[in-house]
Length: 115
Image (tube, rainbow, N blue to C red; front, top):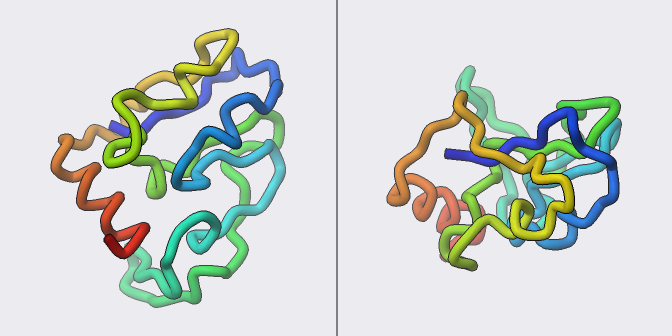
C-alpha cells in the first residue's frame, strides 16, 4: 500500500528528504519519474511511453504530496516508511486506493532503481 499525506499536513517539509524514491513533493511542485530514480522512460497506463524527466502536474496545490507510483513504503531501504516516522502530525498514512503486497512494493523498488 502506498502512503498518502492527509490535509492535516502543516507543510513542515520533514518528510521530503527522507524518501529514498523522491516520491514526495511540495504542494504545487511538478514532479518527474526520473527524480531520485534510474528511470529513463516510463510506459503510462494508456500504453504511451514518455521520457522519465517529463514534468508531471502536481497532485496537490496546497500540501506536500506523495506520488503513489513511486512510493514503495521504503521497502528495500528501511523497516518502516520514513515519511511517517518523521511526520510531527502523523499525516503520512496508508493510501487505501493503492493496496500493494510487499512483493509488489519490492518489484516497484527494483524497477525504480534498476536493482
